[in-house]
Image (cartoon, rainbow, N blue to C red; front, side, top):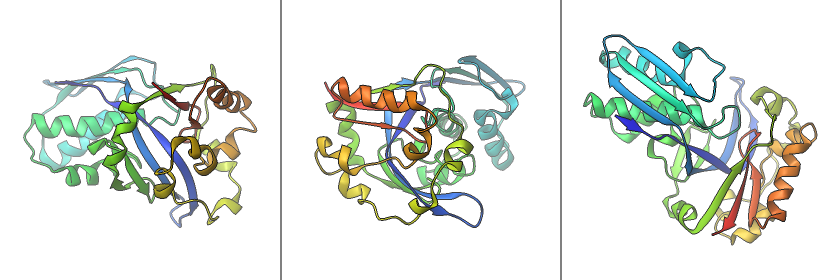
Length: 258
């Protein structure tokens, strides 16, 4: 079985506050971007095998989220070993959720291959154990997310964005932003600050989003990564209706008329 796990972008990203467990509460809208995908193939095998191709990853195959997804279901349902081949096209550490997408698609594929009968809600519960935004990729439709990104409210009406507009995703050459770096630069006065309601803001015309929808991480990332800020401004010079960094960076997206 072969599927094509896609990436996501964030329409707005508010860091609401820090939790007692050390994580941060967030508010964002996830939007799947179908044009940038990995290739994931899973077949039954005598032993568990993980083959990584394409972009070189910085983790061992046994630590890949796809392998962890198989282990999660194996421990619960004793599913057989498989061979997993991942051809990586989505850059990692860019705020695009590629690893989370791979993990979620692995769960969905294994659920189908071995007829486990898990519903989307049940798969979301298991995906959330693998990563904060993994649950989003189970249904893989636009969604309003809160908590650590694991509390999902579908917004299917925004699926038309992918068909009506061109979404371009780029990363400045050589730029990489670690999640730790992005969080460490946040100013605490952001926590609890009053911001426009994202669910209302996205209902305005895209031309208004520039004044309503913000990614809080831009305030911590742009001062030390001016190339990312410059790319955002270049998107606007090229005619983007809206441009923003996604996640904690380093990727930037622009939404253009087709």
